[in-house]
Image 1 (cartoon, helix red, strand yellow):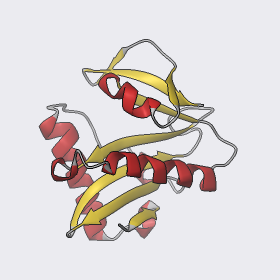
Image 2: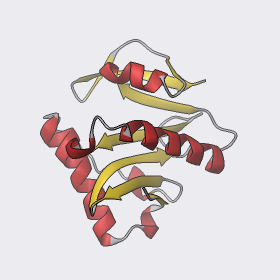
Image 3: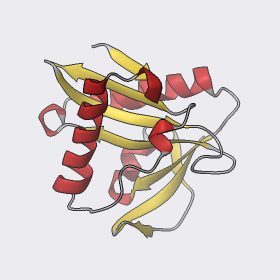
Length: 149
């Protein structure tokens, strides 16, 4: 599997289309959550887009946001998504492992904070994240803040 990690300016038109389509297919359509996915964070010069393709289909994606963009004192991982056709095969864990390696490489001094859908708490626990807040609603979906330890 070939993982790609690119800044916005490095994305091809097709890669940008594919990552936006994957995010919209899952977060807007599958989860019926109508929210503004395009939030200007994608274009920040330090934001990294991590993804992979399988059989010419983008099957995994997330973005790594620099400190100060989402949280004043932490970098962040967000928009974590696996295509339905690729679920249940460990790809989400691979994606997170690659992301954590990239965070260490590009932001070695920074702690990672995420806003996680609450039902995924145990998934993130497996990658060293611990709950750091009570439940709150984000776009109508229960979320929690988590910090990597």
